[in-house]
Image (cartoon, rainbow, N blue to C red; front, side, top):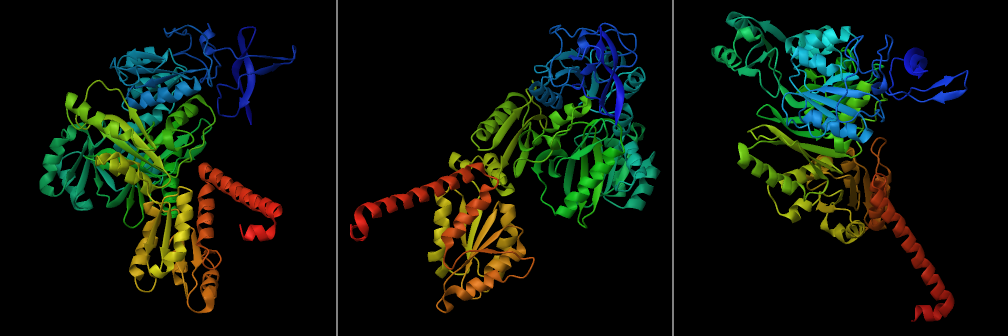
Length: 638
């Protein structure tokens, strides 16, 4: 469907042209002038002198009808970029900084409003207005300079945003959403009305109400502040009725506005970053696991290690939660995974989030680029991961002042020696304990690989240890008598530079070891298993039944039947338990097949395999030429 929008000009005045349905694209602003049969280019919003009553809110820079554009100050040139609009961000912390970094790649102008002159975003923003984002007059003045207004922190003056929206200011996400998110109790009420699974909760106004909640929900009991709570602030746990009073006092008393939640017996904390476009389209990033330290996000593992069913359930709940809100942008949905495989929503942030930092290196579209795409009306980008695994490690202040900076710089120095690691330093002028000063993202071929690299970085191991990588191929056999055959697979893998490990895990004599190996292989970073066995050849099939990884069976010649029994055993696996196989004793081909499997997602390996094929071809041609030249007798008796 098409709708009319006054985003094009004729004789320096706007007249309607067709744009894509509800999505207000800032770059789709050309029209066909029928009387002149030619195209007229888009006119930048900053070059407009008079406000229009029927303007596309994404394109026009204004605070209210009848106001004029206020020059920004760095220059007064027209805006040229992917989206010809100034994006105003309330808040200039690390999230604002990374928004500016993403914007610079797309030539999108980002202004920030932040009270601190040296806030992290100040050096990168198109313009930094120093002022409070919860002060009404300041926010209104800031809005006059922007084409679209968004947030990097939800604790802003929502009443002013609602007034500005009534005046025609484009706010994304909508102030109604910010209002819901600001009050965690109101959040819970809203999501419960939309059938989103939550921990049980109730408001408390006095100590008697808290005691009734304890009787109803049991202990431990989570007590939370309704407003201004983040990074664990505003939360207190009462382990018994005797601790209720002290917990309430720690939160500032009942006058602050409190509610309680039934304790969620979670086994993992998860998060899903959800992008919502102006046309209400929804895209979800892969679910991640978040690990907290003193209630602050410490480590994020992407993707989360859980079953496909649980991953889909988490994504569905996150998508439904964001669909119940209004406005475009990126939203972070924090979730609990319980021991009985339930997913419960914890809370939602209407902005980029700590749990999505890894997307800068690990996904095709970072959460910051995605947020900008969404708020200005560009098509949403691909949220899928471009690397198999990633870990984000938060650089939290370990000490005050210069000692803290020294410790952080030591960790950064070690990180810079690690393959696949990227350092993000937020350039905050003051170091405090537990303050978020930066983060490090490590990407790699498997979670086992990146976890090993993270451990080496944190444990101050030698540079040799830091550069070590987890094996990608596991070679297993039932007995050391199979080793003379299976060593050929290891030789091939070593020739191609594929890290591998060789293990004896008998299916009959050490079944528990075989079971443990098969179940843990994927988590440790193994991507292909080569299993050799003679006789009945149970090992390849049993390993394949326990792991989702591809298994290549190698029939090993035994003293009887010349290995035919092993071959037949491997190729007759029941339906649903696939095992590839090679000729008897041909572990070389097993190694080559493993390399080809890995090469599907590894351009370097694929190129090396092509070179291997070329080398073997040349070797044959050389032999053929020698035979033709010297004759067969000289060839056989050089």
